[in-house]
Amino acid sequence: MINSYNDFKIFIENLDYKPKLLLHACCAPCSSHTLMVLKDYFKISIFYSNDNIYPKSEYDKRLEEIEIFVKKISDDIDVIHDEYKEDDYNNAVKGLENLGERTKRCYECYKLRLEKTAIKAKELNYDYFSTTLSISPYKVEKWINEIGYMLEEKYDIKYLFSDFKKEAGYSHSIELSKEYGLYRQDYCGCKYSLKERDERIERTKEKINS
Image (cartoon, rainbow, N blue to C red; front, side, top):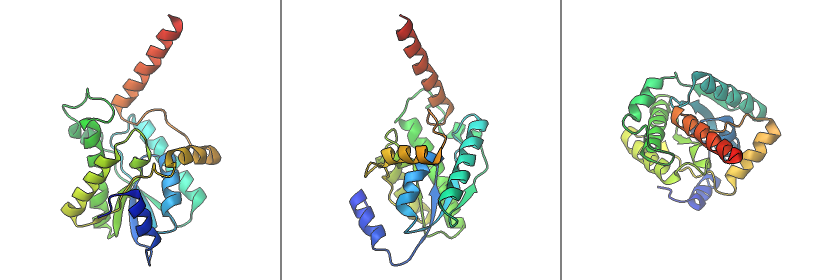
């Protein structure tokens, strides 16, 4: 089991073949740096499974951006998108709606998306599954990897350690977003983070006007 980014880098740099990786992705900017790290070592398919994203128009926009970006950087990476099931997300976070960022609500959201990725990877005979989520400084990579290894055992499909904010990954994703003209959203994706964003904007306006 890999438990550090250093061990992860040693592992991928010593691979003697290109394993098939199903990589869960939430948006193009988070995919950008992550794909640059992985694409020379794995045969990658992006799995876009994000029932948390609200509204549906935002879900569609992020999917379209990923498809456009992937075509720009490689002919060998395809994008598989899951059916949008908002009720799956609502059920996963039921009773946790009023909790904020980096709480149990987010843990359950990670778990929902990673579990769907593990199931799909097993179904399609991939060697590994992983996620781009850990590139964000707002995500808890310890939880992401804890869930990943739990699902590895549950579904008998290998999980690839994820901590893509290392080596200035988040900053690099911003640079790549500018280079490729990617849409960078200003909230995580769920209806609750959208509400929290709007509340922050309103508080800022009040301070300016006070």
